[in-house]
Length: 133
Image 1 (tube, one colour):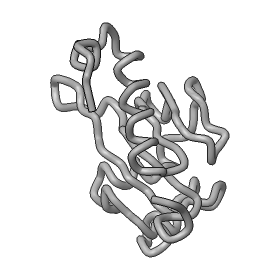
Image 2 (tube, rainbow, N blue to C red):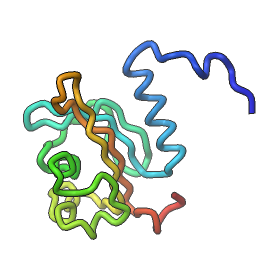
Image 3 (cartoon, rainbow, N blue to C red):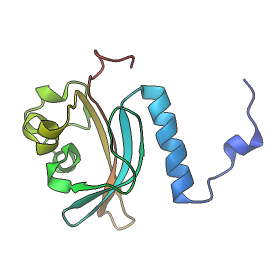
Image 4 (tube, helix red, strand yellow):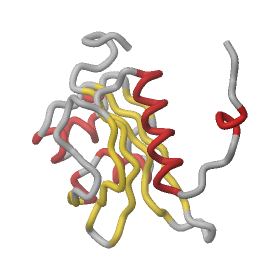
């Protein structure tokens, strides 16, 4: 395997870096949707999305408190849930009642001052047992 110098150059902007990271994570994990999000009040804004198992796209605005991520950042659920329905908080979350979520991964993304910017997260309708992960 050979690498080009371009493989090691820094990305010139957030959008391009985010796009590359989401594509890499999607390819490596096989999870149905990877997202980079930000929070703004009650809004959970999808900055970018990668995956073909859900209809979520960059620019979509969802309700923050409906999300698994809102529960994860306050410690009510784990960052990795291979069987999301086995986590009581996730089983009760509105988003899980709206769309099928078998597996969940989430990581808080913080601003320089330590405040929450958003999340890097993934969901999959089947979870690890139902797909090729």
